[in-house]
Length: 134
Image (cartoon, rainbow, N blue to C red; front, side):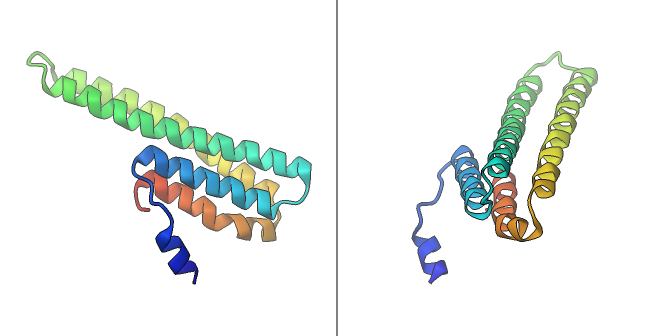
């Protein structure tokens, strides 16, 4: 039955819509799993942080594609220009990934084992939506 229902659900059309849907599902899972209002508010803030970091990474990837295209079109662009672009992009990605991992670990630490089990599938779906595997 669940497969039939999920098969009829509207599918996101863009990567941003997929991220928004995944974050909403993660928020719903947290809201349904965590009864304590204080911990629930803290967990929802962490979900917002995760959502923010995933969106930042997606935007950074888009910006890198645009900048790389511009460099490829620049006759005078040299090896150093490409190396600088990639180095800068990697540094930003590393920082965002650390913040993403820290927020996810903090979320798991905040929840009980049974709450985490209820939230874990939505957490995996959020990451899959970001990577395009969903």
